[in-house]
Structure formats: C-alpha cells, structure tokens
Length: 285
Image (cartoon, rainbow, N blue to C red):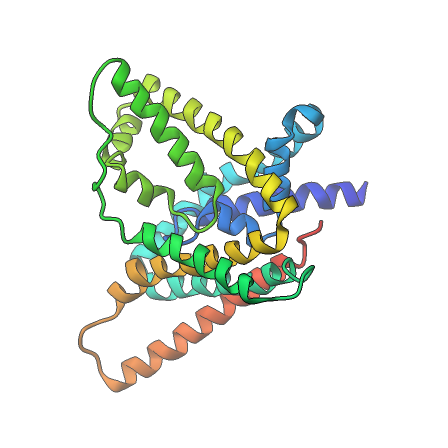
C-alpha cells in the first residue's frame, strides 16, 4: 500500500513539476520529463496505449492531473517571478537543466563513448540551435479559408506535437515561426471551440504518430538516441540565455553590483542543480 501511494505521489509530483516549468523559456515539457526520468514511460504509455488500456490510462490520468495542477497554479507564480526577478529564476532553471545531464549520461553507458557519440550530440545540439534562430513569422500558415484553413490547422497540430514530444524544442517558438502564435492566443481568448478543438485533435493525432517511431528508435539505438537528446537538452539552454539572462543584465552597473549579481547567480544555479538532482533520484520509481 505504501509503495503504491509513493508511486502515485511521485507521478503527481513529476507531472506538477513538468507542468509548472513549461512557462520557462528553454525548458520544454519533454526536456523536464527526461530530466525527471518519466519520459520513457510517457512515450511507452502513449505508443502502446492499446496493449494495456487500463494501466496506461491510469498512468496518463495521474500524470495529467499533476501537470494540469502545475500549469494552473505554479506556472502563474513562475511567470510572475520571471517578470520581477528574471535573472535568478532563469539561472535557477539553467542549473536545473544542467543538473539533469548526468542522469542522461548514465543512459548512454550501455555502450562505450566513441567518435559517433560526439557526432550525434552535435547533431542534436545543432538542430535545437537552428530552430531557435528561425525568425518568428518566417513561415505563415495561418492563411486561407474553408477546407484549406482546416488543413493548415491539422498541419500545425502535427508540428506542435513534434515540439511537445521532442526535448529541447520550444512549442511557443514553433508557433511563432509558423505565424500561429497570435492566432492561437486570439482563439483561446475568444473561446473559439471549433478552432481549438481541431488543433487539439490534430496535436493528439500527431503525438500518437510520432511516439511509436520514437519509442522504436530509443529501444533499437538507445546510445545514439540519448547522445542526441543530451545535445537537444544542452542546446535548449541557449534560449534561456538569449531570452531571459542576457536581457536582464544592465548596460551599466557598479563593481559591487556585479559581485552581488555573481554571488546570487551562482547560488541560484546551485539550487536548481541540486533540486533536479534530488528529483532525479526517483527516476525509477
């Protein structure tokens, strides 16, 4: 009974952490899921949903309850803190991302590191960095009417699913690139149920289409996959630097101000690092 309670509580806490962190630039939900050791289970539950409908449904419900609670509560606090204290909060999450890398590295230990390992890491890193440099609105698919408009929505949903499932890729940035960010915000604020419904169904379809080949890749080539995932995760930290840390630095400040900033940043980084390390201990729970 106690072990079952601990398992349920762990799933809820991990879901809560993932949901609340999704508002932080550079920390995608899938990245946090990997760092917390629940990513493989999520992919497997979706990919093999029909093999154990009851078990997978219960797991996903528990996870979604935790994630929903995180999105609906702590994410607002994190957004407020990012607005008021962007530097220490961003550095904290930077430490959290870095703190999860040793746990990812352990997953590559089934095979010895070789030259190809570095190649896969560089490939993952380059993909995330390249996506980050695509200008917002460079691809505008929020056009057309009638059937064309809804086909564009289906395409957008599949692309959103790709960003949700793959670690290190910001969903909000992908929406900006596609020219769909403002349109989606407008649909949400105006309660456009048809628009949101079609986009939601398309995203769900995309998730189911993507998870099966992803799970096969992770099982067939675990070493190469996790080397690339480490590249994804490290590459995602660039968005934290670019969007939050660098803009928070003043152009002019006193020497003592910089000393205080350095001490505060190091403390925030260590706290984030230790927090994710503590949560990573429950990867197999």
